[in-house]
Amino acid sequence: MSVCVIGAGLSGLAAAHALAEQGIDFVCLEKSPEVGGVWRQPGAGERGPGYRTLHLNTARSLTAYSDFPMPSAYPLYPRHSQVAAYLGDFADWAGLRDRVELRTEVLSVRREPAGDWTVVSRGADGTTRTRSFGQVVVASGHNTDPALPDPLPPGADTFPGRILHSVDYHDGRDFSGQRVVVVGLGASAVDIAADLSRHAEQTVLSVRRGLHIVPKQLFGMSVDLIAEAPWFTAMSFEEQRRFCEQALLVARGKLADYGLPEPDHPLFSSAVTISDEILSRIRHGTVTPKPAIDSFDGSRVVFSDAGAVEADAVVYCTGFRMSFPFLPAGCPANGQGTVELYKRVAAPDHPGLYFAGLVRPQGAITRLVEAQSRWIAQLVGGEAALPSADVMRKEISDYLTGIDERYGNTEGSSIQVDFGPYLAELREVQHA
Image (cartoon, rainbow, N blue to C red; front, side):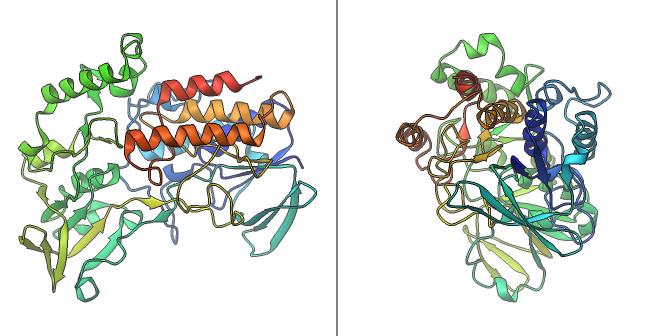
């Protein structure tokens, strides 16, 4: 068989669709019992970030596949169950069901001396299977390995309540009447804190570092639609930043006025948090901001300003580490350190290994993944070709230099892309 696609979430289905349209033989391996990736509500015994209140932060028109719109009855920002249903419908519409092997976990991927790839997988019945492929497309996502502080603050081992990661949080009703501390200020932290504030006796949001909080809409428009508007894209990057900073001051004022730390970096020089709700919940007194956790003292959570609260649970919304345990040592995206991929897709020293969806844009990822997938299909089918390994390494070096200048590091930011310029790059290399 020609290609093995790993993962049947949004990125894996996009890759599978592009390969199918090119008439390329492939199989898609998915360890979950259904397609949909992170948008599926985890079933019994599963872990996953599909908490009950999870919704899109991007407009449905931009998050849908280009040739399969989301239902018009969907709201502008559909909930996770609607997105999961949409992805299942897409798999049916595109005729991908027969190509997807569900409940099949990839155990290892290795390149043979002859150039082909050996993939070992384990099926639902526990039996392993070894197959050979010409190419492998990794589309298993990067929110896989929960990241907790290591070590946890002093006293955590004797805290009598629950300490959990956001991946194990599903429903605020599970914490009804409890006192809960949420750690973080990213998307999951603000979603979970807002959800808890409707059920918990007390909800505290512990924030170590300020982030820019951006509402889902400005001037009555979804912010990702603004980012695509011709009048906005005609601006320089610095003009865009100044415009957005002024719009945020008008829309929500200073974050310090809410008891949150002001960001120590300019807008767009780090990931932003999209939320319409968290600042309102703070203003209504249902979420109380606090600084970083310093220690635990019995059932008390002690903060860096020496303040403390009694708590029954602490939910760490501290993100994920990229994890690709099936990849061989030395792969440029093995979950350790900086990701080094040509155009964020191809591995210069591992011919035939591609990645789809291993990017973090400011906005919807779907059109970027579709462009990646079309390019991968062209590379596999021989309609496009990669440059020499040296040229690819030079492009990677230049890209990472720019990332370091903008974000101050590469290890945590090496998958950041700007939507418009990156999409233009992908369109340029197609058929090149």
